Length: 142
Length: 405
Image (tube, rainbow over all chains, first blue to last red; front, top):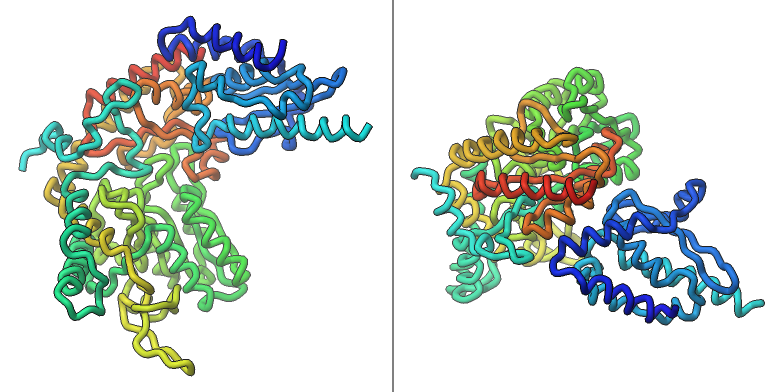
């Protein structure tokens, strides 16, 4: 599936809920399915700055696609990363670089997009894209 | 005047609004207090009717503005029982006041001297002193806290010596609500000949300090914690200290005479008030103090104490909830966590229920390190909060706990 298709799928899933509480409960549920980063990779350099909770993010390249794993000590943050990773993981670097995050707003989690909110969603997206940019550069070199 | 919380709430327009479809429950008063109509009107009135630069114009508006600004200084002086009005320096806020003093002490200190800070400080009362240490080579020592979040005075006594030149401590901890025994701390420092700076940012909305009785050398606070506007605050310094300290910033207003060969500085308080000040802010700071005194600090303390006691009982009844800062002398701040749940998660859920609390390290990372936690949820109550709002908080925290476990 393309990033756009996955994002549409997420919008569909979240449209089933009438209120914020159900949306949050589902997000927390999605957090439990997050592809977890290896414990030994939970090092200082994998930490994302700008989060009140701690967030570790790792990226690897497999068959020219970027595969992300992550973890956080806060469950709502974990849910947000799970949503992001579902949309961005296993995609080509160039597609990740170009993708937008408008769908976060559309699934009713707009407040998390605010750059002033110390949950680091903005930093997370930036970090996902930075990994993609780095791998894109590597692919261009080879 | 009898204390009627519902009537008081009517003075605050913002308390009538909704957040996320729920009535706002504002419990982040330790970060900043809401503003009563009287303060808002005061700012509007200044800009609508007598906006002018102060201390230099001979025209009517300038006179009116100067009179109002100086009347505000008098309000501050009376409120804190300060001996002379020129010992009241208007600043941009607590942080500005601390930096002014820390900068001024650079020339007074040399290697071998020591300064003492408490483990309960806000970063703003740590970093300027660390910078002072870097400039002068003096050593920074720390008064530790115990498990209850109370300063250990027997350890403080051991840190004090004839090398101690300055002690700085907050009046009330912003992260835990602990009221520090500053009278004792000041007395002990003075016995060793050290000066004391007290950071009153967190205290002045709850209690009315008598600065002459405390015999403190410097006391700093911010208007916005006291229902006044942001960007203005007070530095109190004993006249002898203020005369000794060099000016912090150069500019207009702070000079007596300027030639390219030499400038002589103005007297107090102008020596420390370079440039056009926050005129509206200063005047509104006075209005905020007048407003608080109309309600009365005895009534404020009594009501807040009732809220603290009630909220502590109700929150403690939640299984797995732990309160940090359990000293006997405590103001209406409750810092807590629920076992196994990140404070950020709780803050997010209760916000959806219309409740404003603070989460994180509250700019006091050393305290969080002491308890080995990433942060806390902090609910801080003001005199305009109600028992019903405590109930709303407790219900929201229970809801969050159910959702998050």
